Length: 566
Image 1 (cartoon, helix red, strand yellow):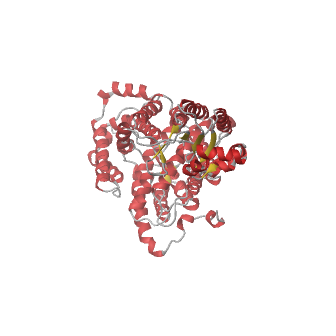
Image 2 (tube, one colour):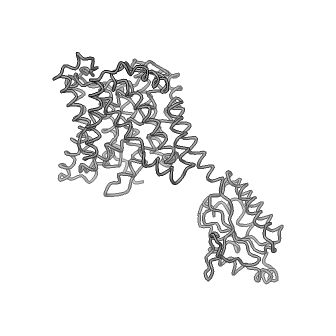
Image 3 (cartoon, rainbow, N blue to C red):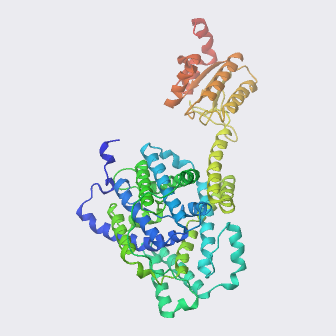
């Protein structure tokens, strides 16, 4: 990596004055969408709305300084906010000074983990969650968001505790619903939903909140029991380290690791989905930018930030050319937080609930649900189990379960691989897995087998038993065994011992063992490192199956033995 790539403001590199118009329009559009969204997300986490503003400003400025993607928007995010809010509520009273200090410390820890992952180029961590597990995770988060916002939407007292218990309490209080609050919340939800169907660039949330606020003023809805946001304090936050004890830090470590993984997964997906016109996505550099955003957010007393796919799409679709659009939006949001708190006094809480209800249903990936159900029923179970774990268990525990399920599913898939006997396609030198019905050919005395996965400890025994079984199952005496190894990209120590045992079994059966098409450089190095290349003999490692058979077929072996070739 060139040292120039580590200079700040890389995401503004190559900017020209003619790009100003596109960045200005994108910045204004982003601010119009971010203002209600950041307020609602802060409320979702139990924070004052202005804290969401400061998180957005910190995320936007830090990413512009250190990130690579020209469009990516970092700030308060409804995906991770329920994660840390639910866990922090177990350690401190929501909204208390201790709660705020824990959230700020958590932001520092998450930011440090994510930034270091980028510096040490650990972008592969973003692939720990499979699509079904991610879909189930988001579905569970959506349920949490919807349940948490139902009291605000219905004008009921706020509920706390486990999700299922809150559902029961809400159901028991439905007769106390405030129709004015319900109408305002549903109205905002409908406006946001309709605006998105027309164009994602329409700030439906801002329009809905303005109209709801006007309705409160014109019809005097405060006197009808509609709960209002109230005037926000004007001013800017002061930077400083959060006051958290060593015990607090230790308690936050597991949560910080979980949230950091989720942030990396979403940042990588966003970075890869919105590739700039010039160059390829630099996921590791974007980790540094988003991580720096959480660090800055924590230093200003806010909470962890994340990359936002919807806001990033807005910048891209609105003609943004660089991170200047994010800086323009940040300046507008900062000005509102510093000087315009009084403008938000009559915003109804139900309007924010309507925005979050839209966010909740928006992150439910119905198309993925249907596609996985049709094409991969086993993986559809992963969606349901992950979703249930997120809803029923504490959210952090549910995320850990989801990550564990994703890893176990990957390991399970690798363990199911069996060696298969290949057949020669008639009239060609191509060896292929047998079809149904089989139309391939076999050469007497020759067994060509393939293993279509990396060789590792999780499948080493299955490989050995399977290949030895193929050798023993042949009716005629096998004189040559060729391992077609094009898919074996890695061989670990356990697998190497299994391969050695298989070679010895082959020789005991009176057959010559050869390897063909071992294309992976790592696997080739492993053969040398474990002494397998010397054991097999370099003269028996070939570029193709056809070459192995022509050189070592039953008719050639007697000649080689007469020539003294081992």
